[in-house]
Length: 184
Length: 184
Picture (cartoon, rainbow over the protein chains, first blue to last red):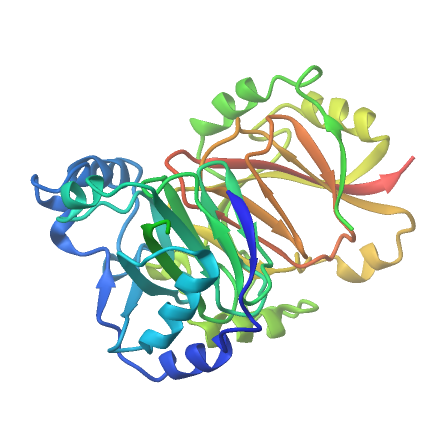
């Protein structure tokens, strides 16, 4: 993981967070698509979770996150500003939310569009911490853990498909802006 | 400030301790206390957890951890070797285990004997990472996050009553040796 810088002076992340807090997410993960054999590594991730006893919140476990998407939940201007900051074009971006007690258990972001994404060149992936630093907010990518991050801090991932996870064992919701696309 | 003290792998066979403990039922599943108990700090903790929506393992949720004790679940010689390493006399020690998908929400260790402990001079609180480095195993003490720790690493806490928490976002149980006592 490589620290890129802080976007707080060009994006008002607190307003973004405040707006999201009153909205219904586009969807709540993990969705059932992981069980689809056509999703690359979907069954593998599902098996790893099942074998280690990880359960969804609906089954009394902790594995659950909310997803917010561009235009429906936050303005495109946010993404445009972020693109200019990291000097990359956006292929996909979203904001994830972990409520206290929830985790995004260890996985990589596979989807039905994986083969399409694999054709892209020079893809960079970033995470931006849009919540003010909170106890119990942790985000791990491979062997690196980000915690107590300043609002607006941007980190570049080793790879778009890096294994990662996040958890909220604090008292406030944890929001993260997620972005990947080709470097300009 | 949380402080790294050294590594105990050369004096304690932590794998063997884990193997011994892993086959046993825990002494109890924490948290042991509730708001019904007359314990310093428990009312505040209970409110924080409830307001944030945490659900205990005993109520079908994911907030909970197993507790193991010397003499009963693992050999006293482990405590003796550790005490000599850190040059402290133990008041209390235990091994905690967090299963994948579970967590210890942000808290401090409210004790039955808090009044007594507060009178003790030169108290130190230490934790030792018993498991080999694993993805998704996180301990957080105040503003320090410990991730991918070498097996046997020992950290001294800022204070016996420091706020802390831990999660297991990985695939294997997370074991931690906990110790507090007085410096020799």
